[in-house]
Length: 228
Image 1 (cartoon, rainbow, N blue to C red):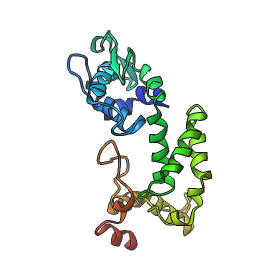
Image 2: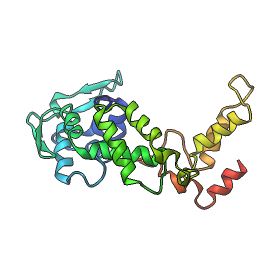
Image 3: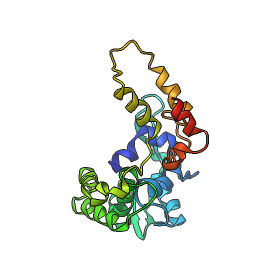
Image 4: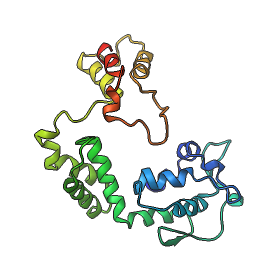
């Protein structure tokens, strides 16, 4: 999955790596790769970002085919030290982050906040989920299984601790009242409903996406949700 992310044209363009050349380095992809996708904030240094960005230099998208393309004229030819280890090609960064305990912990925390409790973290449960993920050789199926089988997932104190995002709220309501694809509906209504309650589909405010949690019911958004 991480290897695919690094070659994905949408990721490359959204994070400006098509403008990342060894002569004019752009750090966006390198920063989000470490902060959001793999290790989490605080588990790397600014020097790691700078050096990783140089390793990612030249990873681009062909303007005609819109497919991944490696521009040798824009890439660096020598290795860089990232997280205490010298790496040469972008693929080296995958094994590099997987070797760090911070990766398993970061992913376990992401899944805990998404499926169990967005506001109150249980470190013991996070450790248990991370352990299962690590021991499975980083299988996403093991990560989700460990999350859903944890006692915390079923605990009474965690019931009603998650707030539905607009996608879940709108489409879940549509299903509940029996709406189906073969009805005579203008499905553009759904998109306007999303926007009205704070979610512009495929246009997040930044690469981290929407903050979620209590932000879905802040201020006048709760009233709009009820009206919708």
